Length: 283
Image 1 (cartoon, rainbow, N blue to C red):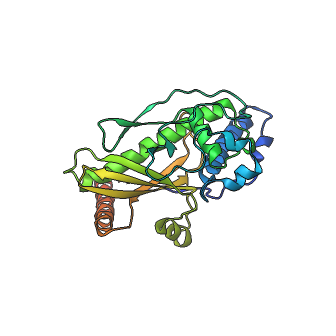
Image 2 (cartoon, rainbow, N blue to C red):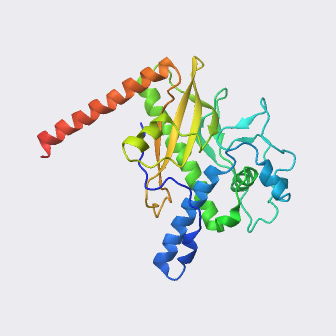
């Protein structure tokens, strides 16, 4: 069950990476820094609710979601993988610097209440959703290739998070053959007690993002999972991933508290067993 470290958790305040443009190696660094800067600024966007102040400051930006202004109302159908309505805006945004694909990919994550899986947003939907939350692409100087990598990171992180959820579910609740994702919420500014403790007493950086997933356990119970997103350091040159996830049941009811205790005890026992085997066979 995921546990992450990080090398930097505070949002980057100035695009210093733009200075690195003179040779091949610096261009690689520049791409990595652009991706990290954009990922953090997207996570931080819109964390105070609907970006009404930003919309007033820039009326043109408020038009990026025609037919769907403001935050989604309770009761409307929302896709938990991108927090957008089921009738998405696929139109290019005003001032958009390059065209974006409209195609959407199917995830492997089962959708609660159906026999289907969730569908990821298209790059255009993702762009529009971030603008609606207050993100400013000009501050990140993204290229078309960067945006493609960000979509890959977004989707890969969701897939990894679901695999971590399944580790908990399969270990502690094998009676449910197919747990499903019901809903999702992100709040980068809401620091979990675990993340705060690790920061204050163990020296870890704070996560740059936090998500809460509601999982339907075969119709018997809905359980909340918490996902902290940490900066893992270098950007992988192939996958472009740099995030380490810490995924665990939320500390919000007795059932989840018990699961946390049993789960971490299992991890400790496994680590002890591996250490013993190492000492016998490899040391």
